[in-house]
Structure formats: C-alpha cells, structure tokens
Image (tube, rainbow, N blue to C red; front, side, top):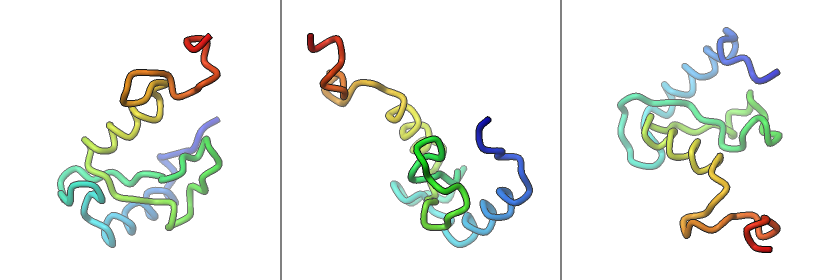
Length: 87
C-alpha cells in the first residue's frame, strides 16, 4: 500500500513546509504549489523528512512526474541501456 496523503500528519507537515517555502523551486511562482518528495517514497525516500521536500508549482510537479515515469530520455532513446531496444 502506498503513502497515505490524506493522513492528518502529512497535511500538517505539508502546510508547514508550504508556509516556509511558498515558491516553486524551479520558476519561483507562488500559485498552485505542491509539496513534492525529492526522493520518491517508492524509491526509499523518507516521507516525513523536511529535507526530502521541495515546493513545485503544478506545472513543474507534473513535469517531474512524467519524467520519472518516462522510460526514455530527452533524446527519445531508452534510459535503460539494457533495454530490448538496444538488442
């Protein structure tokens, strides 16, 4: 089971972090800020570690999510050099 983003403890941490860091770390906007785990929880990131959090606007949060799930790099070639595409 995944992380419970509806847990009151997460809401409190998220709100405190957003108050302390109201700007997107990428573009500086203060609109529609998401609190993002730098190292994803599924990759072993600590969901409660303040140092594992960053503020991202919705646009940059979505870009990060898409790039994490995209098996190809910017060139369009697979990131995994052991991919069947290289064989």
